[in-house]
Length: 172
Image 1 (cartoon, rainbow, N blue to C red):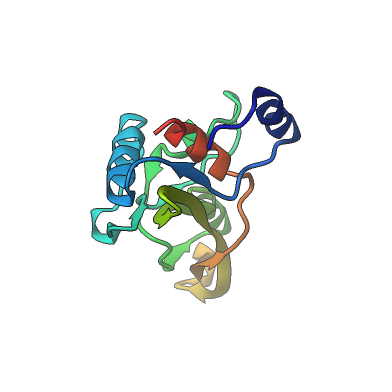
Image 2: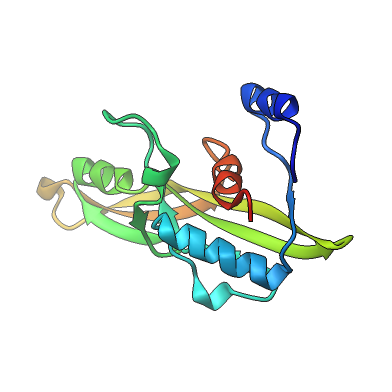
C-alpha cells in the first residue's frame, strides 16, 4: 500500500500501525518473500505451522530495555519453547531468579489472502506472561526450599510489534 508522503509521516509521528498492508505478489509468493526477509533479520520461522495462507515465527523470550536500550531486533534474540508451564524447587531467591529468566514469551503470525487482485497481509502477535502459582514447602524446613508451579498465561504485549514487522516486509 503506497501512502502519500504526508500521510505516511503523520502515521509515523502518531505511532499508528496499519491493520494490514496490500502487496502485489500472490499469497504464497508473498509469504515466501516474507520468510526470506525475516530469516535475513535472524527471525526463525516455525516450519510446522506453515500453510498456503500463513507463516508463524517460533516462540521467543521477550527482552525488555536494558543498559543498551530497547530494540525489537534484540527481542527476537532468544528462542524458547512454547508457553508450557513448569515446576521449580529452590529457595525464595532461587525462585525469583528462575522467574526472571523469561517473564514474557511471544510469537508472530503473518496471514495472507487474496483481496481484489492484491494480497492482503495481516500481522498478529501472541503474548504470554509467567505467573507463579502455588508454592509448597519441600524437604527439610532448615533448607527453606519450596516447590513452586509456574504457568504462562495470555497477556497484552508491552509494545506494538506489528509496526516493526510491517517495516520489514514493506515494499514486497
